Length: 614
Image: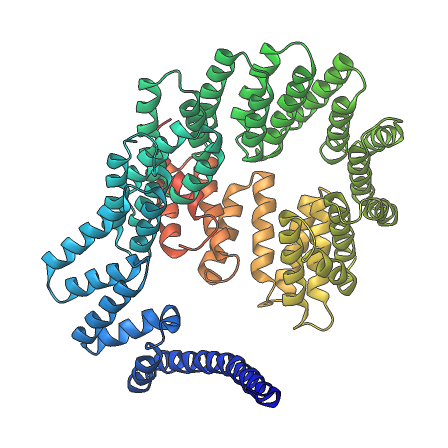
């Protein structure tokens, strides 16, 4: 061959390669477009068009993963069972890992009433998988995706037998299957298996249980099984830990304390876990239980920081109990002040005692009308050389509140703004910003308040964000229809009076508002605030009357569920009418199934009925 012929041959070869390189992507792109169009026809219900395109596309095995489910569904829905069977058999033969297509083929047999063939194929699939951990999980997941839960369980159970591991193998997977099936006791049993083999993953199990055991009956069933486990395995501390956890979930803090105390004595550990439990009880307003926990810590740990912390929290829990028992007993406040003074003498000046002094200052100001004493205490804390910076900021906010209480809003806003600047993008800074927003609101400067609130709704902790959104909604809803904002300003004035502990004056102001602005959109808010004030004054019948007006006339509005629930609580906790409280809780659960109070209302109803005795 001459040189020119060789050159021509090379040119032809390179041209052919270039053409092939160009054609392959073009062909791939066309298939992708056809797949998209065929799936679109399927979604739109254009069966014939979709089937026609799928039958062409399926000839290229690379397209099968993208069209398999839709194509098979169409074949079945059009009763083209033989075509479906032939298609699946081809896929089984052509794939190295054919399990997905085998499962679909077995399902097709079942659909046609060929149960024996289906069961035989299922048995072959499972038998081929169970000696290999990877294959076991793969096949089980495929069964699970098809909602063949019994086959999924069968796969794992057979794998346990073959792999000679009856203890913890596949426990987590099986627990999740039982969870999907609603088989909660079996789910719990598998979680126990998992914990025994994987105790380090206890927190994961707790999270799963918390999501699954949403009803009181579920937690009771879990506790019964757990008690049996603890009795049979008294040395298994993981079960004891779970028993503490389930009691906390049930808000049975005394039961949790009994278990935690036993564990602490057994292990001779420190007080940190007991302190954490006490704080949880305090945060959940279980004040008597919190007092009991912290008193135990103070008695048992008389040396070191745990004693001081416990003593501080005993008084704090008692303070919260006194402040939330209406009407507030002034003599109990005086006792608390003396307890704080004794604590400071006992432990000296440190951050714990300074926190106590902060609380003492607020009692002087808001309950004993001794604002000068409170201001002096807070200034001392702020000026202390080695005070924790967060505590210094908290004292500044408290001092600002007292200036507002004393009718000096300018001094208050200076302090709030200092903290906001010093703790920007921190919870304390957000709290300061919220206080500035409320101050603007009290002064009737609603646009300025709204500016603060709009920022807080986006970038803050949940509690502050919720408060910001609630105040923002109140302003927007009730000032838009009244260009003069007179009613809104009078309502804000009443809220300021309430903040300043002028409860009777606040009630009178709200009565005047109702009289002057009949039918205003604020009416239900006014009634709700009046109910709150009446409760704090110990006028329970007036509180019930105001709440009843809301439930009767605004039952479907934002405050409807809140009013209904609060009325039931007053009958339970203050009027000592358990039967009426039960009826209101029962009615509440029927009327407001989506309310945030449903869980607590259900528990209260069942406790009153005697379902869950401690």
